[in-house]
Amino acid sequence: MRSDIVKRGVERAPHRALLRSLGCTERDLEQPFVGIINSFSEVIPGHIHLRAIAEAVKSGVRSAGGTPFEVNTIGVCDGIAMGHLGMKYSLPSRELIADSVEIVAQAHAFDALVFIPNCDKIVPGMLMAAVRLNIPSIFISGGPMLAGRFWSGDELRAVDVNTVFTAVGKVAAGEISERELKELEAVACPGCGSCAGMFTANTMNCLTEALGMALPGNGTIPAVDARRIGLAKEAGRQIMELLAKGICPGNIITKDSIQNAFVVDMALGGSTNSVLHLMAIAYEAGIDFPLSEVNEISEKTPHLAKISPAGGYHVEDLDLAGGISAVLWRLMSRLNLEVKTVSGESLAENLAAMEPVVKDEKIIRPLSHPHSLTGGLTILFGNLAPEGAVVKSAAVAPEMLSHRGAARVFDSEEEATRAILGGSIEPGLVMVIRYEGPKGGPGMREMLGPTALLSGMGLDDKVALITDGRFSGATRGAAIGHVSPEASSRGPIAALRDGDMVRIDIPNHKIDVELTDEEIKGRLSELPEFEPKIKTGYLKRYAERVTSASKGAVFER
Image (cartoon, rainbow, N blue to C red; front, side, top):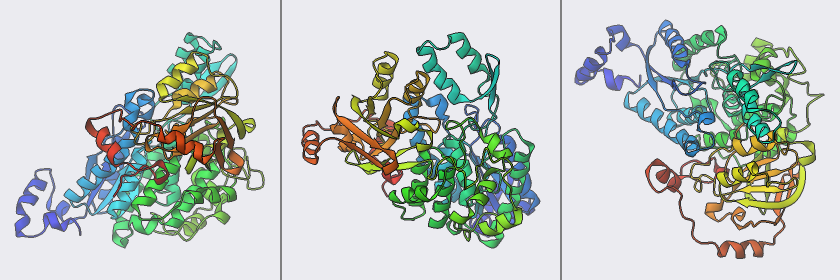
């Protein structure tokens, strides 16, 4: 056992003395040490209940002959961090989470790991750590939040946090009152769990299941459902099976399984951030996965489920319709079925044993009647984004799939937000928000505020928004993010000026500005040297090491 290095031999008597001070018995010391990597937090709705998940996991580990030790990581609630300095720390927290797991797992010589994430950067950060460490590992998330219920006139509507963000724009447009907003605010998030739509957190939890790193149900069983506790116990028991069989993340996370995750992502119309995170996980695993391959997958994958913000259903509805297992079953002809999973069996064997059924074809459509023949995410290339940009095409109005408009350029999210609230954004424009990338932000913050305001003001089907930063998984409309190279690295987006004509062609994967290469090069040569916005602390160090969004915004090795 790896843990023998801290508990075997005469020279380890001091180590055993310290372990005994924790209450370890002789039997505990003889058993494998299992690290329970919990991201419990009292400030993140998706994590407030994770103590109960951890207790269930530990119960499962003990019942299968392991000795569990619970440790913690940090976490950021993207919703609470949105729209202010705090959002600059969200994506950078992913690297700290991965590093902190590596440190605690190596320092204490754990034999195996059970990861308990739930929200946006915590899931990919832990997945990056799992492939980096490559010791037996399994994931059990905290599960999705239930949708809220809100009376709008005589209609009882299902709502979520994105409904509230959008309602702020409706207040600004005079469509609803501040009193109505307050009533909505009180019911939109009814309890614990990751926000109820197919936003980044739930996208990544679903994709963890599709990757094979979590048991069936991980992505969709609601946080408050008793099945979630049962799944946590089973994850604790199953980690001991993985340890006994020597099955590690490197056996599970392969190019084939990442392709499977992208196939499911396309079918679900998941968050644009999933591209950033899956690329980062591939990088950690040493897998070469060019961004252009994402479009190849999208072209072959129909969009089967429209979950909020793309549609009116929520993750609890997807669960009732059969969950990710039903989506996988429906997509079998497009998946690599021989990949290993944490069940100890292949994906094909899992599906054969389960015989999953789609229980509601309005939620998970058949292949013969998809929402669209191609996937819900699209990678765009062109002279404005030579290394690529990402759009959640599933949430773009049909009339905006192809668009030509004059640029209105802003050098920060705050400038853009003031312009929207000031009523100066006219239909047909292409808003450009730059210097918000991994280095330029720094931290590549999400910008749900501007997109939600545009949506609430009825402009999301009339105005395009382009940025080298990120958008929330809750974003809808022609919102194109991750433009690479970013402005701070002298990418073409830095050359844009008000009035430049921008052409967006999502069906053909194109994004261009009507300038020649010489004009772009000439403008870039006139720019002053980029001045970092933050010059102290972690964000300074982060900006110095982080790479392009096209590479997953990982650190340089």
